[in-house]
Image (cartoon, rainbow, N blue to C red):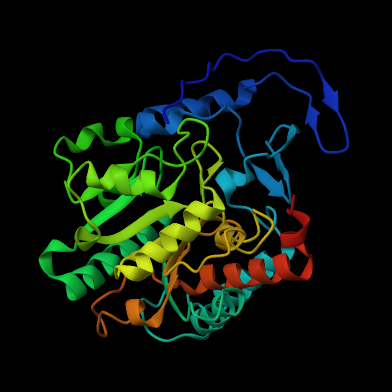
Length: 355
C-alpha cells in the first residue's frame, strides 16, 4: 500500500471552472512550497504519499486550497466524511460541547457518550446491545480480537485462541491489526509473526475462484487447524484493498460454522459502515448476524472516533476499569458523531448510496 512521492515543482495546468471545480494556478502553488518543505523536513517520510495540494477548507464534497483552487474530494478524506465535510450541524454540535470546557473526561460519565451509545444501538440490530467507544479503527479491531480470544479461551481452554482472517485483508496499522491483516508487505517489519493469527484465501470469485465454504475448511485443515483451535474469524464486509465481497452462501455457512463451534464472528465495518454501502452497515447485505462489528472512519464525518459494537455476553467479559482507553468516548467527538449520524438519517444518505 505504499505510494510514490509526488514531484513538488510547480506545473502550469489548463484552467478549469465548473460548478464544483476550479483550477486557476500552477500545482503545487509556488507559495505552498515552503509549507511542503517544512512537512517533508519535520515529518516522517511515510506522510509524503499524497498530492502536493494544501487542504485549507472544505464543504460537503469540495476541498479548497488557500489559492482559490477547488476539487471534488472523491476520497471523502479517506472514507471519513460520510455526511460531507464541514457540515454546519456537526460543527455546531462540537462548538456547543467545546463551550462547556469539556474537551476530555476519560471514562467519567457524560451526556454526549450516553447519547451516542444509545443512537448506535438504535441503528444496529437488536442483538448487538453494547458499545465500546475508542479512537481509531485499529483500536477497534484490536479490541475485537481481544474479546474473541478471551471468549475462546473461556470456552475451549488455551488451545482455542487462533484468529482466522483472510488474504489481502486490511485491519489497521498497529501490531495486532497487522498480524490479522492479509497483506504480507505490511508485516515484514514484524519478522516473527504470531502463529495464532492465520490467513486463508478470500472467496472473491476473481483472484480466488474457490468460493465454497468447504474450501475455507480445507485451508484450515491443510494447516492442521480445527474449529476447536479457533477463537474468532474476522473479515471486512468488503475488502478495502480490492473492493471484493464474499458470496452470500459462503457468509451464511461461515455464520453457521461459528455458531456450531463457539467461534466469534467479527465484521470489520471501518470502511463500509454508516451508509457507505446502501445500508447502515455492509454486513446487512449478507443477511447474517455478526457477533461483533468494528466501526470507525465515517462514524463522525471527520473526528477521531471508533466503536466496537457487540453482544452483551462478549462486551461484558471485562470488569469495571479493565478495558478502557485514554480518549474513549471523547465528548467533542461524540457530539460530532451523533450529529453526523442524525444527518445521515435526516437526509436519507443511506438510501442515496444504494446501488
